[in-house]
Length: 214
Ligand code: ATP
Image (cartoon, rainbow, N blue to C red):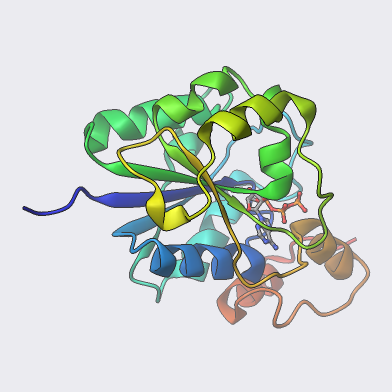
């Protein structure tokens, strides 16, 4: 009997996408033996400041970044919507397309995970997927109070022990990279190089389109 498909999803503003995102995506894909990992750029993040490059540029940069990575893919569904891109809506539409059996893994950096209690109907996210929390070396170590019960009831020590289509949480200790898009925007705004922090194809796009200049 064939095993259910395993799909990972990593949402973000990707303003711009960087090697912290890509290395985490690749390592989780290999660790979890995913069939595919989708990077999903968000259109109008409900709980963030407006990104400083257009949705079109952010999408184009993510496409450049994954072009030679067969298991990494770009999913532009949130950019096609005209309302805020709630992760729950995205999960519901993915679940409707992929079917009830598919194992869905939502990747969240530790910072994003800690912000979960502010998300739209966050208590329902695990109805649709498992959550894999990615370490970020620059993050605080304490989970907020609101997440303690959830962690106590739903977390599993070994990510490979997650069972079923969704409902559990595990932590993934991938290669730590203290890189953020904020840092990259700041470097570019002050005329410094971001070589080796983003893939060369992304750097070429940034340069060609004059993005993030002061
Ligand atoms: P910004 O600095 O603009 O806030 P960011 O670098 O955090 O951006 P996002 O697009 O907001 O990037 O991140 C998308 C997802 O990737 C989030 O879940 C975030 O926690 C995670 N992430 C971002 N950078 C890293 C990193 N260096 N290591 C692990 N996870 C990361």
